[in-house]
Length: 265
Image (cartoon, rainbow, N blue to C red; front, side, top):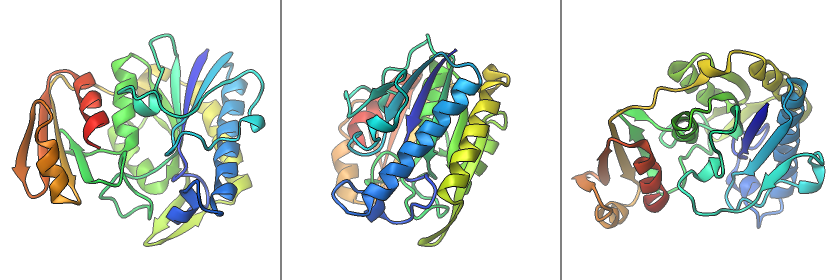
């Protein structure tokens, strides 16, 4: 079994403030370690379920957060960014059996996580065919486009509620929940155990049940916090400025959406 693991930080246990997610802040060290521990837990769960090949993507900010020396010797790690439209699942292809997403978080516009956002801080909200889009949804559709199911996700409780609506077959592990600017979280050790167990269980299940239906026609609306960004990005090919800081993009090919988001978020 060949498994791809994409790892973010804002959905990891305990993390609450942007200082804790920033490479240049002293608080980051504690939470990059927890990000790494949760990645290792997913790796261990995958191996329990029979994974023989594992590729890990450091998918937060610089892409240089995971402590490589803490990872098992037989996995490979993608650091930093190629600039490919697959973004947080860079180098995923049809040869993989499953994707897992660790440390993911609620979407821009959500109040379920004090660190909620989608791809960047520029977008106040992104909607795909009317549904508020998280980084999970964007990249799970990308993996499904390739025929690879995203079978397990850990993060905040708000994201888990979104996933249950999108596809209840996806394995889910809520390690924390947001309350305004605060969080209620599992301890790091409890989160690690829950992720390990959840990853193993998900990979032992019916993997294809977690595939999302990739829409044949896609409408993306992006509302920006800054109206200047809407004015600027209306010039992306196929984009339309529809007012109220919002641009609109339509296509019959989901890869076009990924390519567009790579340039305008």
